[in-house]
Length: 419
Image (cartoon, rainbow, N blue to C red; front, side, top):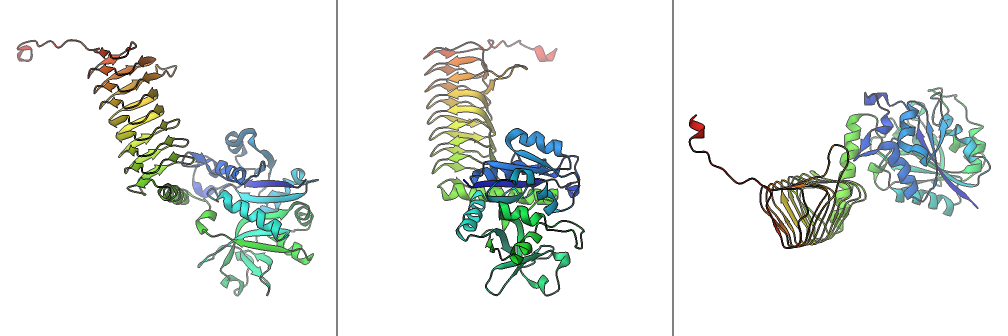
């Protein structure tokens, strides 16, 4: 049985981030760069993942835990040297190994999968992911023969003036035959301008042996963008935001302002739901059809909204299950709660879900009306068809059809302010 293995390169220093943290543990949409690279491999169908770590390895290991195997690169001697550190995990295996970069976080899993599949179909021993750049300065150039086959990769610093005119560049993503990669790693040297072991030299070694190599040109160049500083981190966040938002719009969601709507990964939104500007929706949230969200709304983790739910302006909800037709129109916080169908939550209402030690739950039934400026002190349960008077602080359960009033009677003291 043949194996498919991924090696994620995660040993670099990333000094341009100007941070105490490893470059690879900085986040895009709440998820670390290296974690995104590993998850991309898994979503492409690769279960066996090796992370090559070195500088600040403890931070990366804290993020990835025991979800991957680790290889340690003590000295930064190039990409070929990094892969050499993972040889023990490849020995005795047959099949394909994909080399990914931990600082290239938005590569689509479908691209990784296509790279593997085309390498198998074409019976190639090395298949590279490449891109066409109008300005390829700084990138390794793809050298092809007359038949279009990849002969070698030449790093920019080692390229001739003629080679520097080539616009096809190496994306740094590879799919290799495991056995032939191991053989080639034994032959690469550090005889180059950088004094490093280039993984790219493997291509020439395989070609010299008569082994077939090839390349797949990526369709969307933004997929191979890397992160070296915080400017690029913001750029990739922007790219991912536009990608995610566009996908939801293609699926029938109306997003009024694509640039101020922040929808994290793995969010489900039904058709004909409208998302107003300045709305943030965190990972794992489910929103039904014909809902209205925002503006200035914050939908946090663990939320499940049925069809025709309204979440209005300056509303925050967290771990909330909200049934069909319910409205939370404005200026409310609903956390750790279940709300039934066709219920109205008045302006300024909050669930008091945290006592400083524990989180507790609030349950509100169907067809209920919660008056403005109500405090629901959890744990508390309100039945169906209940009515809570505005300004109440509810600490006890409210039965079906009851009116709950929890506020002191008004007292006017005449002429008090004159004194």
